[in-house]
Length: 158
Image (tube, one colour):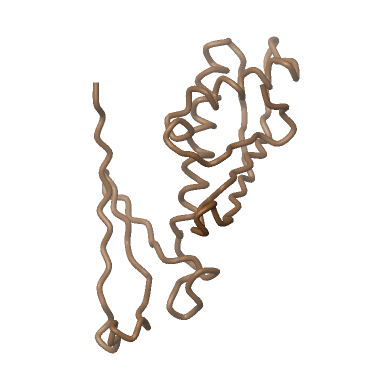
C-alpha cells in the first residue's frame, strides 16, 4: 500500500531583487496538511546573510530533524510494545556535511544522541535499550530511504 506525503513550498522574488545577479532572498514557506506553515531558507553557512534567514529551517536541518524524529517515533513504538514506559525523549541530533567521491556536498552522517527517561516497574537494561535503537534504525522509514550513515551515540554498531 502506497502512502502519499505532500508539502507545498512557496518562494517569491522581492520587488527590489534582480534575481539574475544571484542576489535574492532564500526565505520561503513550507506548508503541510493541517495548515501548519514553517519558515524555510537556505542555511546561512551555505548562503550568507542577509540572503538567507537564521530564523528559518534550512533543508539540512530539516533532514537531520526528519531522521531524528523517525528514529524517535519508531523507538517509542518498540518500547511501548515491549511494555516499557517512556516519560521523556530528547535528542540532540547532529548532521555533518562533507563531499562525496564526486566532490558533491551531501549530509554524510547523522549522529543521534537521545536521552530517554523510563519509569514504572519494568525499566530496560542498557543492552535492551541498544537492541531497541538497532531495531528502530532498521524499521525507520527515513533511515531506510537515505544513504547517510546514521549512528546512535553510545550504542555500538550491530
